[in-house]
Image 1 (tube, chains in turn green, blue):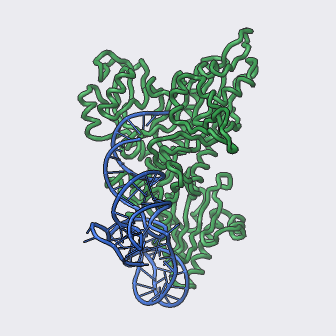
Image 2 (tube, chains in turn orange, brown):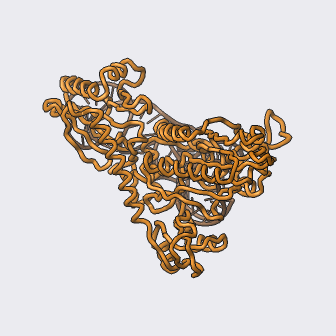
Image 3 (cartoon, protein in one colour):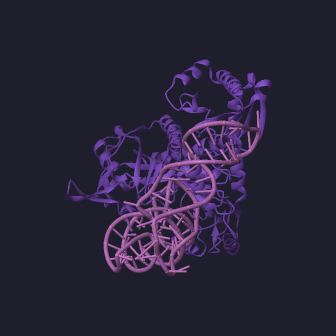
Length: 502
RNA sequence: CGGGGAGUAGCGCAGCCUGGUAGCGCGCCUGCUUUGGGAGCAGGAUGUCGCCGGUUCAAAUCCGGCCUUCCCGACCA
């Protein structure tokens, strides 16, 4: 076990922070609640951005950028929205040495400013739909912060669409929820539940909020993405109106949806172990780290020559030659595995570290594969391939170290990580039919409770006060086989998932 | 924002009670020996003791205020 990372069992919160620190994902900024996303952490975010951006564009969305500052008056136009967000807004009152006539809010989310602009761009049904996404930072004045999970400033994407009809907007809301669900599962290898929130948990200003929820290794729930059907709330507040096919002037129907750097926290808490970070191959900036082992200079030359040959076989002579010309730290040689994703294979030639140190170095950074080459391997014409997933090792003849082999290996790890997380998640879900069992469940530990429940703000608040658990999402909305609401005892055809959330 | 812990070398910590100019382990640098799982020996470098103010001949140490961070709670896309 790593000696700079406390075990999950001993102190889960500390383990989470230790993993971040050991993998150099982020560091604390001088301002409370703010973080610096370090290169490895940022590369993970870039991988998510790349994949999501592609998926958004495949569905017709385009990117744009709206300003950081929002006039204070904008926030007040939508009643629920201001109530929800005003308390956690940072406000700029001075600029250029003078007090501003109207204070500016640093965006906590951009519905208002985007609504204002859409009002100017939309006149006719022919102007719809508008399908815009932006990649941006937002600020929310959080009382209690945790790296990646809740920071005062965070990076995210927010999609904002406007449509002709309610049906079309609802369809978009659900379509984007599905994008998030499949992205989480296929790309991040994190199983998620998807569905609507109850009224008490919905976004301030939305008609209905849908979410994806994951279960972390400690059994707590993490909201990993949301998609909101905003109805005509913001269209009315900002006068997004158009003349319809029926020649009637009407308000547009809008949606918004987002995921944030919180997903990096989800990634850590879903897959990592007591040795540090574990990354799904599709997300990892490095697909493999090559560690040479040698004693003498002769052996070193022999081993490095063999590694060069192996890399040329795997990545092509052109790439190896390019890496040799490339500017950078030649102690850790970087070779591109996928030029389009910038994922690399690294050859760790550092002579300041022994093989054991390098082993831990790359282990803690979650690199899916480690390839080791020592004199014995050179003599036998093999390399040793080890998996971060389970430490298993495989002896592979030089000629067999092909892209097809590595791709298959990576795909296997990606799938195994998902399967492992899914098994863990499903074990953590219990079906509960009485409030007594419900109380016991959340008194004993964490995990999800699947229940029949008739949502109610008052009851949900009471349950939260008693157990800390909240409705994470609705899984069957009035169409489940008739049952009994765990709290009221009344008939219920609504099934929900309760959990203690981050 | 309430309660509790912490802040001294890059990291982890001791010293503080009882004031007298800073120490340990790891890491780092140099050299040699090592190298299939976090090396050994020798030598060396690194500190406005979180910040501001007060008490004092003298403050890491005592007093006051502030900042940051961790845990618990309240709040919360």
